[in-house]
Length: 287
Image (cartoon, rainbow, N blue to C red; front, top):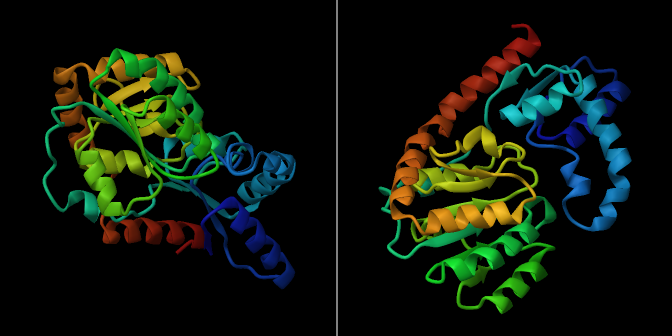
């Protein structure tokens, strides 16, 4: 059995013990399990952290095998004394982002954030950074796409900078592709990420990324090649990167080319993904 999270794996392992089954259990690790209680949802969830940490470690250590999706998730598992049997990203259908040729960066510079408005996305840091950056690049704009518990942070930002900030709580996937086309750069200041899908989507549209050196973001964003990396939890550094990129057309075009060239590394067909899973199952089952 292949489980999609450490929490599902815990339930399966307990059921396996109760049934006295000899089924092999593989747990997929897609991110840092501490995020679920520390940086997502109600702040009251932090009281569950000791329990969820124990459950997560139980799953990783007791499963027959662990599969990770990035360098970051691999290192997270290794900290528990476990070596992943296999490392490969999840399958994602990027057709919407590949069905037409990418466009050049827009004439008017624009930044874009896409994601849930939760603490792990560092929405507060983004708002602080934009308040610092916006006056220095008055002709630019930030579009925020997403909803969540931190929506009040974005509502205040829009109220403070209505001419330079817009917010769309929900848009269809096709509209995300359009928003990328109309933007110069994707901004991802997250406190934690596994392997951020939105970054690959941005690369497919030839858009560079300004990202935090946190989680799996540095696994995919290469500073000066397909984007810019800034220290996590540093709104001033993020603001400087925004000003630097949004005000430099030559840099925008250079990083856009690098972003588009980087996309292929993270794309896979259903057949390629199936082959990875088949190899994983074969190794765990010993066939």
